[in-house]
Length: 70
Image 1: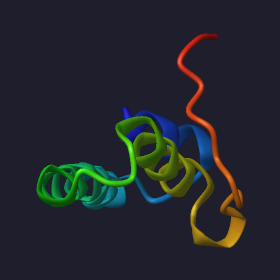
Image 2: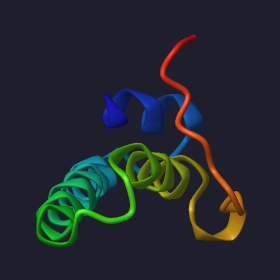
Image 3: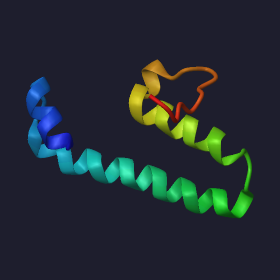
Image 4: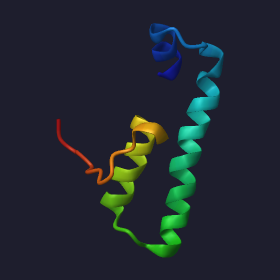
């Protein structure tokens, strides 16, 4: 998925695997951490993960909401 998007946007497609693994690791390790602490709530954690993955550090929303319906 990222390879196609990188190509369509003119990014180096050889980095798609790196970014894919980074996103998977971010979610997996956060999930492991959350299982230990159980706070904040799942929806809030998911909203913040999507916020970081979608917006990056330079465009983080201050109070993200998880939108589950389109």
